[in-house]
Length: 371
Image (tube, rainbow, N blue to C red; front, side, top):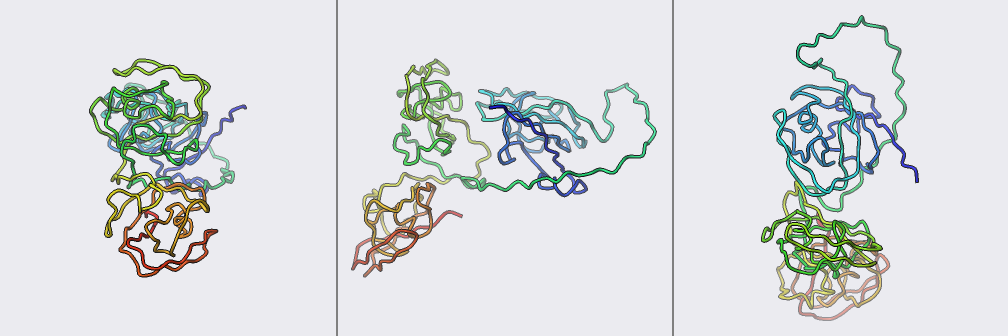
């Protein structure tokens, strides 16, 4: 398939035509929904040495601050405004930090996309020292015809940018209920050099996550940190290697795999657990607890009693759909409030799920979606 290179005019000031105003104040290339390698962006940027974090040198991770990177690269000075051309390129397995022009960039492991500056025209007149540029007489300019720009529809993030829901280290990812390629999940992991692991960069789904985080250069042995795991399709083969004190093995075709990267600028982290099936089997469940569970909604399979408040032995996946918290087949963090037992439970039919009525039961729960 041929890759299409497209140019988008992005404005950072209000006087630019209305069609481009949706990109005003763009902080990072990764913030553009659907952006892909091969794209070229013309950006009006005000250099700011203190605006956010930067990873890399000359080639930057796509979540780096554009305003700081343009100063680090020597394209603009701090406080100077200019139009620059940014080329989006494939992600790099690693980024090397450095200190330049008053900006210190950081080193990091792999990231899905990168960018680099390929040219610029500045407004503000920054020129190399000692070079006197001739003044051109002003010429009448033809009117600018602004082509209509289709608005980019905002895509809701899988997780809040200020609140991250993270699993505790599962060892391996086999137990994840949703292994659909493209699914991203966060884990709190302590780096380790032990455990079985296959592959390099892309690991089989049954590879030990704490060892993969060390092998990928994200964590050191014994270091605890937040990592982002992206589920990938199965590969036809996996190549082993030795890195950072961890040796991985070769393996032939395996049906599911994952990549792992450092989670950045995460805000607050809330720990969550996998769906146990029902609260009746959740260890230590007691009235008054509020838990976060990763649940996959479903319309069939299991039993359920009640409406809005469910018996503790009701299937969580069914209850999430019945309560309107999840759609059928949708996986997401869900807040579970453990409640005292009720004297009776009323059945109803909602969202394709029918629940039954019941008499007194010793423990209950309700569900809601995190805000």
